[in-house]
Image: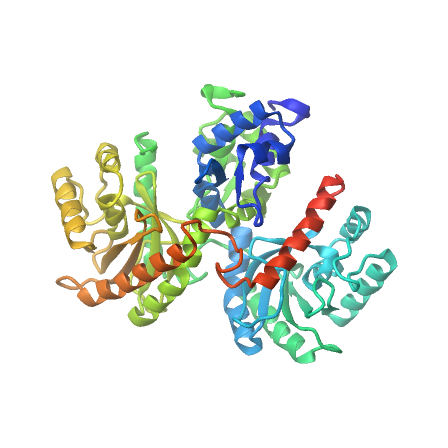
Length: 291
Length: 291
């Protein structure tokens, strides 16, 4: 494994540059990349050049760079997320049309919840989730549900990482976290009143995969009111159960489009295979355009 | 730049493994990866290991691998595609609700059209497009429109690459390609009768970006009939013009979610920034969980 500065592999260095881009910083200059990655300027310059040549980065206006089309293509071929999103979408749409508030699907990454799908109404309440954005597990109802039904070791990671306060109601203390997780496991849902923003309440339930393990959380963000909104929980439970049935019909193997999953017919699939084989033949003749 | 076998950089070797996965082959075994990449088994084994450690690949059942969650996250932060998709979605939905057939948005990559969004009805005709899937430019109406309004040099690439026949109607001859592109530039739309499947007709119009350059094609796939479907073209033109207006309102800088683009309110955006800063603080303390 080729190793560059600071003992990092070449791959780790490339990823370090890609990681400098996020939902809040979708474009970066070379100077910013140097600062954010802590790399020497010459190293950052060389790596950015390589990434642009391979179209993992694109040049934008005013000497900026942004993540490139090729990364989107890889993302579109990621069965884990794409399969979960497709299984979730009709159920999220149904829940959203009843609630008229944010309904969202989250999965765990490190000590964060990553939101992979969301539907909102125009007058929905204040909400911290973006599709492709992360929120710390301890702060969000979706995150707490993933924590309650996930590996116990993640709870220790969250405690070791430290829980940052976002409002006076955010859970920041170990004992309160453990009590809350026990209650969520008992109740089968999580409700947080103003843990991220005082005006909003988070409500979330677990989504079981075809293997019977919790694979995601189905959450809603609604106006913060007293008490536990049983009607919202009921709507989320229907959506989560529906999504689980869809995952089971897929045989536990979320796929990217073969017959039966999503809206690609058997006959269309045959055409897709033909077109694909024609592309593969062309590529193996070594003449595929590379502009 | 670290170079491995066959003079390829480390980055190119990693991408070669990721490129072994596509819509038709979303999962691969190590043996398949070795065969598809042409790498020595030991090299493929080492690179797959690195990619799994960095979560660009995930392990699936039965000794398979698939593209990993981290790639989906990068894809969700790709402003070029995500911005185009968000600008397109309401217009594609409107066109789809009138046509009740496939409506799709394509962009050019190499000598292919890459479909980045699609909406269909349950009884839509046979269609070769998948979100995240590619079709050769010369075969598809969306591709021909991108070719007609793109850089002239791409036409030469397509001719040099060779045009593969998918049906007796596919354009495979240089003169016919050039005549067709001239007609599309004159007419402002492209129509193909049975070029990919005999039962289906492709119809596409160009989408102009905020900079006045064609940035995408808005296409429909409908039942193949005689003649030119002016009603379909009219519906696509309305959608394409609407999408251009949305792109202009975004100031030519498609973004990932700030106020004004999409359904994130100014107040929600402030919360998102707060949560993000709390994550960044934690990461810079060097204690972000890494499980």
